[in-house]
Image (tube, rainbow over all chains, first blue to last red; front, side, top):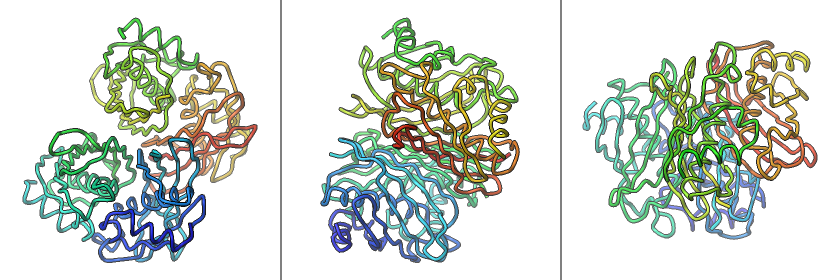
Length: 134
Length: 134
Length: 134
Length: 134
């Protein structure tokens, strides 16, 4: 799937509350998808830092898109497990959310997500996730 | 903290995007906080199921409130790690998000979160989380 | 499965290195299994504390036995994901490893494990785990 | 720390039961440590596959050594959280356990571990871990 197709999938298959994140597809191929998480007052808690919940939501969304991209189209799947580590604050800049598939089995897919600060490239969040392919 | 105080903390210390979840404090004491996650079209992905991202966000929010409630007031803290398991869909009903502290150390707090369907009481989501107390 | 059957399964289906933990089945029914992890110099790192690796191994083993116990016999299954939190040291006493099934689906099972100090009953370790049923 | 120093640390600071894994230091610098996990009947469950518990134990051990290596000497630390994903079996060959530090803070360190089959280089296990620096 190319970038416009992935951007359309983001509109078609995700809840309005997820669309309120304002995610923009930055890159994508059959193994990974990168989304931009734009800086926004809506996502900031006290102190101007992007709330951790937004990072988890963006990570899970990017991973689902990476699964779609792998199969070339929407694929029903559901998150089974997701483990997130918050390395440092994301503050005053956009985030780049890179989701990579690391193994696709018959019924399960495994992936890893890395969120970096767009300005300085530093990793602020890492996650691993397991998806059931339906 | 009593229920009105916890509800106020929810407004004062969380991002507007988190407030859009419409969480309502249902119960709280020094060890746990229960939030109601109301059914909403904003949170539904295709098929009417509440999106998993909303469950993770509600769980993390409930846990932060449980930390505040333990200390009797806002306490600066940050999520270090959160591991979520999605047991079954939450569909067509509110969720009850119960966050329990299981250990408070000097610099780290550990908690567990359980989301149940409000109508039938079945567990749909479980998580464990680690917080750094700042 | 009763306690002797579970103890036999522990010998039949696990690696010799796991048997070196000296685990003893303390209780079991169709939803949970409790193992005793005996205090041993073999498992102690500097300072007399039981090494965390032994707690993870005992937890995973107890959960596999809980799956067997649920089905009434050995059931081929494989750990997909396991998330462990280390709450406090286990030092100078046995551990009680309680594994509970929280959801059994067609192809996946979810469980939670709690390790408590045998002497004072305090929780020292918590984990959640996902198993693929083969 | 060089390879002989790391190998000595493996003997000095870990429980006898961990030493029974037969881990060999293959590489190490200030950010990562690689251990070889030798194929052994002691670690095999039915079917000749290396048991998952051994992979978790080797991963946690490699990460602790990576922390020591970063500080140039033994550093008291304790695992706070560890999340493991089991991608595929490790069967009939050694494993290469690579632990990388991804962030060292004042009181917490974050790392990721990848275990690959020594013969074919395929990833069989991934984990993330959080350590408290004491």
